[in-house]
Length: 221
Image (cartoon, rainbow, N blue to C red; front, side, top):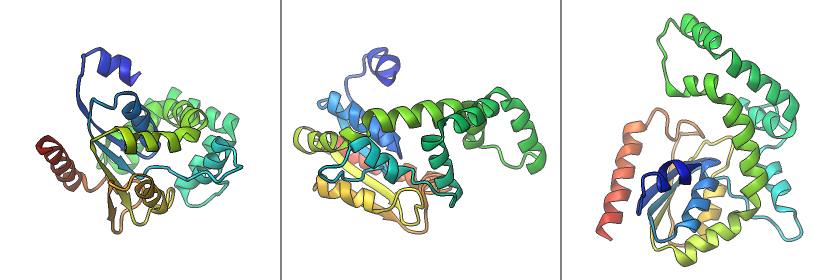
């Protein structure tokens, strides 16, 4: 869909890629399919777990990304969406179908003090995000990450930057370190006192400056 709606529809010949969490797998897939078009590749908290020999890739990644845990909340949500599909799908449908009610209640409880794209996206698009996208990416592409990273290392000439929050409770910093070990030229940045969400949310201006630096460096190269 990204190719059809953006790259092909607008005849884009060169672009920067920025992706967060599971989006990093999509980013890598696009990068290896358009190696000459990528000007820079920036991954935030990529879910990369090197698959040991003898392990089935998809199942191994699924167990690491979404272990059956009830705490913290973000890990419980991932576990529910990946392992208990019927329960999570029902919840997602109820949230999306009645999103206007949940939005009203959220605004009423918070006295409309908090209005963020995160909450709107959660209430309106949970079904696609938590069910289709999460499930399809892990089951369809997770086992291919090794080959994606090797292609980025060997074929792409662009700069690669990996950013990770030190306090990430969903995906450990080891994921980004593993990416660095696979792509030695990658520049890894560990952001102190930030987790899986606050590595972006709450530090938008700092993150924007980081992206500007990455893109300016790419233009100079």
